[in-house]
Length: 275
Image (tube, rainbow, N blue to C red; front, side, top):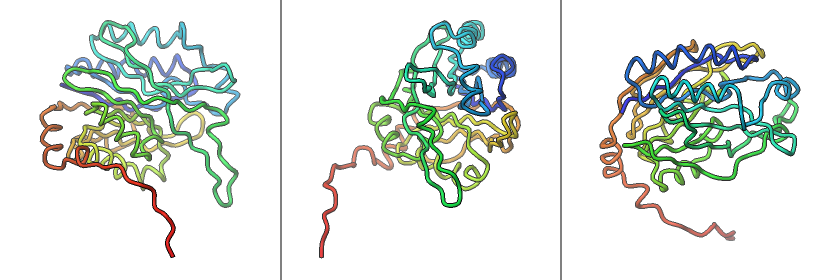
């Protein structure tokens, strides 16, 4: 099976972002790709919450998603939109992934579970949960001959999600992302390799890269990692591009036989205080 990670530099205009995405997907299809993953915030990378509210469209009848479905049908491949903001009834948004079949129909959606809420010394508190509502359900979907597991960006710091996906049958795990440059330089490769190693799964990470219209800079370096934790393909830069690799489900079988961590895992009690 051939898979592709699409690296982008999304801006503030959904139509412009979709126009930038289409030739990248066309390039992937020309290389015989079966499944293509785009980054987090593919359709809109907002400058602030007000700007997000002014452009985010409802999920039902979403104009850009409707055209992605048409693209999937025309190009004959699975297109996985890494994420886009979807307005919710409580005034917040879901950070939602959407997978399209080659028929153009929507196969599955996933709302990002883990949200970045932090109090950082010397800086203002950051509350992603003030803008977004976290999802509550892990998602897998058959993608013959693989089973695809869903995650988004910050999720990668939470091994329990990936263990849950692998135990539910996932052997290819998607990680669309918009990593900052400092955290990308420090953590991007090691976290993604760790998630592949501990689950014995392929990991595909499609990234945003470069300086965006909102003033933010993202790390790029889209990766595809094999079940042994080896980086088998990388866009070693932050420019838009297409990363294509052929993957083999037998590699998952062999990795899990050599290191049967999923099978050997045990439940255990929480530590008690001593002394």
